Amino acid sequence: MTTETQDRDQTDGFHLVIDALKLNDIDTIFALPGIPITDFLRISQAEGMKVISFRHEQHAGNAAAAAGFITGKPGICFTVSAPGFLNGLTALANATTNCFPMILVSGSSEREIVDLQQGDYEEMDQLAIAKPLCKAAFRVLHAEDIGVGIARAIRAAVSGRPGGVYLDLPAKLFAQSIDKEVGKRSLIKVVDPAPKQVPGADAVKRAVDLLKSAKKPLVILGKGAAYAQADAEIKTFVEKSGIPYLPMSMAKGLLPDTHAQSASAARSYVLAEADVVMLVGARLNWLLSHGKGKTWGAADSKGWGKQQYIQVDISPTEADSNVAIAAPVIGDIGSCISALNQAMGSGWSKPPSDWTGAIAERKDKNLTKMAETLAKNPPVMNFHSALNVIRNTVKANPKAYVVNEGANALDFTRSIVDMYEPRRRLDVGTWGIMGIGMGFAVAAATVTGEQVIAVEGDSAFGFSGMEVETICRYDLPVCIVVMNNNGIYKGTDKNPRNTEVAPTVFVKEARYDLMMEAFGGVGVTARTPEELDRALKEAISSRKPTLINAIIDETAGTESGRITSLNPAAAKKKA
Ligand code: ADP
Ligand code: TPW
Ligand code: MG
Image 1 (tube, rainbow, N blue to C red):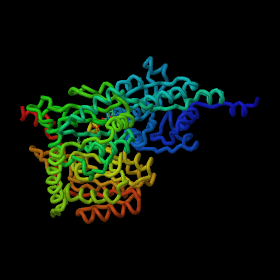
Image 2 (image 1 turned 90 degrees about the vertical axis):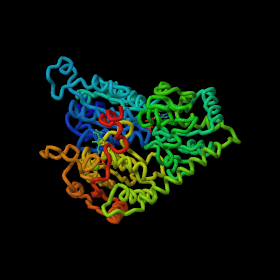
Image 3 (image 1 turned 180 degrees about the vertical axis):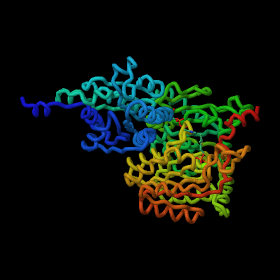
Image 4 (image 1 turned 90 degrees about the horizontal axis):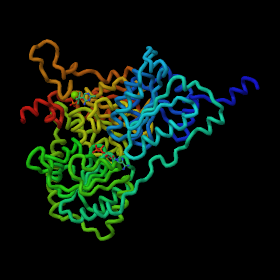
């Protein structure tokens, strides 16, 4: 046998990883090259994979997480060893926290040297470090185990409660050769990676009975409900039951925010007053005040409200995590909601009209007030007058993805900009993390081809700003709007000592638009709603990478946006 035929009969780690991913319909890799994955990325591209190369691993990781949320397939991120791995780790931990399926694959250094701590190039025990921060972590040492490694990573990421998975691929593995046929037979096409989990009939009956008994029922839709892609079942449930609902931030658009049953504009009223609350893919964490305190109508901050809860969730250990759950319904949301729809039968009585009427009254009042505020055109543009333009833009372009981060820039956008389509809002999620912006934007544009509008606080944008080069390089239809108020929360803080500027204040009227121009994109400064509107329309019709530096009133924000009370000084004052 000649060497050539020998080579033709052989495959290697590089190709086996690519073949295993392809076999499982994974066609996109978010990455940052370097030893030992540079050649892997080159070969992936040559083999027809889409490889999106970033400027920092955190953003590649965030892109993978967002792709996971949007598609329900695990998003894939590749990084180099130790520092690259650590840079990607924040995204992996954040994905796990948010229940987004992603796989962080990092190359690693030589096991023998790492384990004896003999000082290898980029030495680190990556597997041990990743383990507590993700749902599962695996390492593959032999080429013939690559198929199993990828299969286990995929299953761990998307089955049950989705999350982040770490896969450690030592440098040596990529170059290992094995017989081509043996290699091919070692690959696994994962059958039914996220199996349906059907709830028990008794659990469904318990929930329906409780709903029937409710005088003031409320449904809360969380991002798990959006992720589940059970849009039609959820719509049927909400409309058949007639129950008012609140969408959590990333569940906005699951039903259009303009839906008659949306209680968003009467949020504080419904949370405090409801008697039966059905959580669908939403945890009773800090974002819902842990189900306790004045928000829920309790007498004091630690007290439980009078609500009884139904919790629809795939995780059997989520129930009772904060307050008692009277009727847990455990399963995937599609199966659970279908079962509930069936069990409700025909002739379901809608909630009492004094409840829905009281909500409608408050809603009308608040919506009228909001409309008045939005119609104002103050001499200096502020969050409201700027976001009114974005609100109208999204209304006219309901398929556009809205990426959103910041403090005030987040809170105001969430409440002002209505969403009309499921899974179109991507934001700071469970941690309120800054830095997801450009990674999420690149992912949304790459995997869907739709227009992305990223509404960014000027501080928030800074965390991932360098990725405007990535956006320009791949010529993505991303329009970034920087809400420039000269700083974190606002731009007016003073240092009492008059030495350096205050820690929350930035360079005044910084030219973020020039960052986009530096890489060939379109940069615009907007000081009025008209200028902002013109620039947005142009960005959407041209689909060119665009950054609009929206200069807004630097006094407009409040400390930490809506969560001022979580600052220790505020808590001290309250005590
Ligand atoms: P939000 O921040 O919008 O309130 P959370 O992230 O707190 O939402 O909650 C999401 C919940 O959805 C998690 O408890 C998770 O277990 C659950 N979940 C995710 N995917 C599914 C699914 N397909 N079926 C059922 N529950 C799901
Ligand atoms: C990884 C803390 C929360 S919000 C924010 C910071 C730094 C920026 C707010 O300023 P911005 O918005 O974006 O200009 P605005 O409109 O209020 O002026 N590091 C991480 N995550 C978080 N959440 C922080 C710091 C923070
Ligand atoms: Mg700011």
